[in-house]
Image (cartoon, rainbow, N blue to C red; front, side):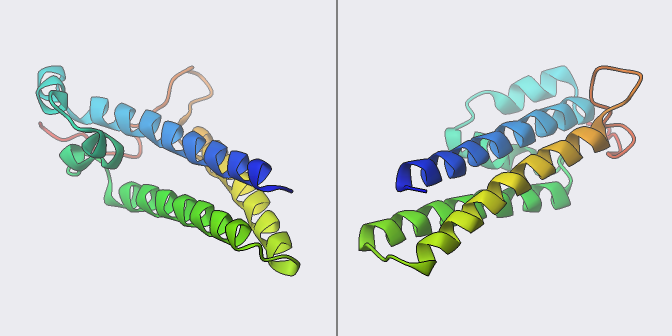
Length: 139
């Protein structure tokens, strides 16, 4: 696989993970907070705050936040490492290992998204059910 294909897989996985966690986190925040409080907190939110959910750390479970942060970090490191290997022109088994790791990340991203869809979905409803996993705060 060339650098373009590798970066497409890494970037695609990154955006799928960010989008799926954005969906889950927005449902959790909607479940946890009243509408007016959500609107007040989202007003004036920077891109960094939006990406890292720093204004909503109390509403989102810590395990999910740390898992989200670690996935973002791993995707960025894999992308930087792949670009560095291709820029340096290292050939041989290292490029093959990068390709295998990239394919593994792509499959792992799909498994993570499917697992969250399975955990938070309901067979009787067409929406995610957050209430059974996340306790509602009085905010």
